[in-house]
Image (cartoon, rainbow, N blue to C red; front, side, top):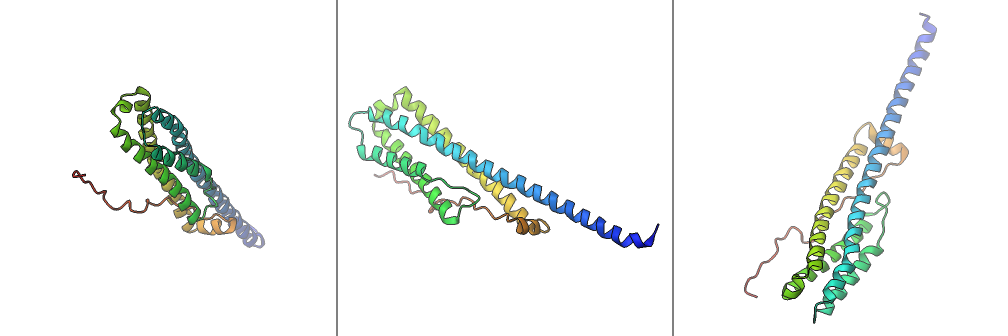
Length: 198
């Protein structure tokens, strides 16, 4: 073998290997980023499913005589607020994600109050449509919890990958930024107070 081609051959070989590492790393990061976006889309779908059930629940409850109008108004307002906030998870700031999470949490709380108040209306609890909606909402809340866990898991995997060497170099070159995770709602660490004397 001619020695004058050895050094350029080695250099070309190193460049090809580095190129393959960068291309492979880039494609892997793209796949993980799209997985995060997909998981966020699934979460939004579950939030939308819940929002779509709310008007049916409110209309069913309105049929109960003397039902607390203030509770229905709170649910309707919370739904409107929750559905008015749209974010792109790849561009979301921690504040935007917290605002989105807060609006969804307010809807959850309003629905919780609505379902708690229905305990005072035995005739409403016996309506088949109400029972069906209640079961659907409970199932949706479970799906939302799972979707949030899936989203946070995919974000953790992605954020870990873009922080590790050598993917961190590829991420920096091509502008792969971190995603924010959903945090626990404020006060979630505190056990609820149960009072049987009221």
